[in-house]
Length: 245
Image (tube, rainbow, N blue to C red; front, top):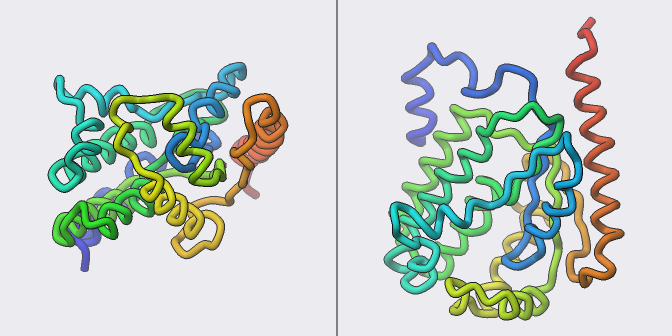
């Protein structure tokens, strides 16, 4: 029995998961490889007043009490992968718990991809010990058991590793200078296994968009997702307000 289930059984007065009560926004999670265009995608939706856009908290990772964990993780993954991923878990959980009156909450990445793609990569690449990996898994289990981690739709920005590798070099973030094509290929494989082939549980339906397109032509893909997101959110809001006879 995992520690998450043990802790849950120790606190039966909780009754239901934290955050499960009240009206919920339609929550869309944007997933994809490094440099797949997630920030550009989110910026497309800034024009909507009723959509709350939550970018990935990269600036927090760059400044954890004055320490750039993002840089340390890439420079010395064997030493810093677990502290970095622990902080990612905390900051992304804060996004999941963020309260908004908007009808749609649009998040860049999630705890689901952190666990299914990036923590798995840490183990298979040898950047973390199995014992450290197991500790993170126990934390994830505890979160799933005790908190309402909502996901109504996943938008997967599907890219080829070669394309994102070129984008990575062009945007030239100092912390990402050591990211290799081999790493991007492995992260791509993990996303494909999860979101396309379904080898790991998917918490919501998946909308796959071709994110290899350049900025001049990708607008049509954004508009396709725009239609799906707004239509699905309207259905959700209607079901929440209609009486249950």
